[in-house]
Amino acid sequence: MSSDTLVLRAEQSADLPTVLLVEDEKTTRESMRLFLKTCGYASIEASTVEHAVEALSHGISAAVLDVHLAGDRSGLEVLTPIRGRPELADIPVIVLTGGILTDAEEALIKQRHAYIFYKPEGCETIVSFLDRLRGRATGMAMPARVDEGLRHDFLAQTQRESWWLQSSLTTGLDCARARQIVHRWAGVGGTLGFAGISRRALDLQAMLDEPFDVTIERLRDAVNEIARLCAAVMETPLEPRRVLTDVIDALGGQLAGKKIALVGFEAPDAGWMANTLEQAKAFSRVLDPAEAASGAHALDPFDMAAIAVSSDHHVGARISADAVAAIGLPVLLIGPTAAVAGKTSTLHEAARDFLIAPCSPEEFLLRASRLLSGAAPRPPVHGDAACEGRRIVVADDDATITALVKAAFQNYAFECHIARDGGQALELTRVLQPDALVLDVNMPQFDGFEVLHALKNDPATARVAVVLLSARQQEADIMRGFALGADDYVVKPFSPVELIARVKRLLRKPSA
Image (cartoon, rainbow, N blue to C red; front, top):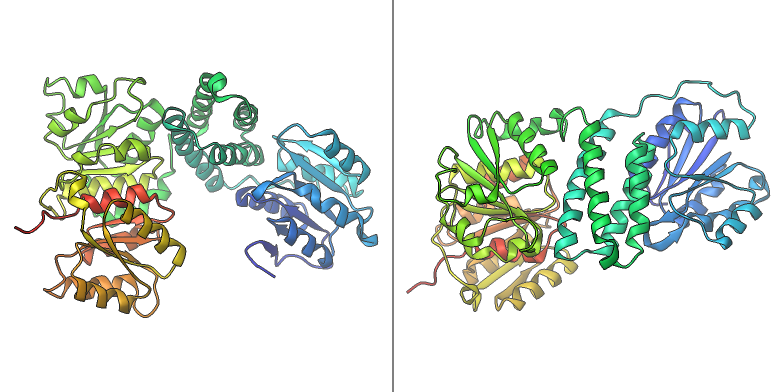
């Protein structure tokens, strides 16, 4: 039995009725579990049809099934196995859906004697309905308030995702990812009590099924409305202060008193950045791109500029690449992958860096601090021709990752070699003397930190540029990597284009 997809809660016992929750969204499952526990229920949680069917043998008293699961599966597939077991033939079953059901789906639900709830619908209403169906007294216990951390996290993530969606509407929409995001907004929003966000997300779901050229302006308005709703209900514009404490402590006050210009960002994005900088005791001001690029010394009072970039030249007066290159301050470019990749010619200096949107407040602070510290200056290299023949070692024990990364580097004419563990990474780096090493943190034999320490303390390999590639996102890991001599990092899941851009900006000029 897989514990990450089928969870039998410890509070399950013979004395408590047990509800099967079939839902692939973790936040929704957690919120529902808390309400059920408060109201005297135990729970079994399953995120797939297969594990839901497996859970039927554990003795359940009711079931709550989400229609839409990952991989185009439907929670309705669990209805027939439930009713096929004599001991479950009469238990209450509630079906949750965020969209219009087909005639066949409605007929199946009716035939299997289940009940339909349309999102958004709060946990309290669902649990009260279960009480009535099972003949239990309603109001046995007042449901606990939804955990505020979950609510804040949802709002923060939704704002970042709305930024990504807005950018994608101009640079090329990934419809599959957009549907996944909007489905989460609709389901989790209603569960956590944000009915307005959930209803707007349901409208968005319908728009994504219409021709894109017809709905683009309505999509844009709907995404903006969701971002506005998030900002309106948050106690602070974005992440709660407790989330940023660790990274601010790790930075040791490096941003305190610094003045940062926020150039070209829409109001929701400028809002969370300003709040994030305020927590780090830095100052910020929002500037119009035309003002920043006017040559009228608008940027003179600032220590750094964070600049929104876009590949759509018709939306807004985005600051031009020439204007960015002419800015004498450290510059952090933030935008979608395609837009940032198109401006890599401005990124080779130590005073230039970039972030792929959407990004987290923690990542924003780390990159800003790194820029302002002037860390790891390197001579610039110009143009894609500089990649040809450059030698790269990629150290990762995941065959899928190494195949993806190797193909990406070869497309840019790099010579790429693969190491499967820490020992091979050390050996290949010492023998091949590559221009750069892409180094995973979690590897057999020696981990990435041990490899990095050995290489940076060996004069023969100390100048090899090292990019850490890892699923670790804790600020302490990133700071440890920098302390050991890493030149940059990329967090999985990553964009190969971002990885290539980060390696390119670290490369030295060819030796004469």
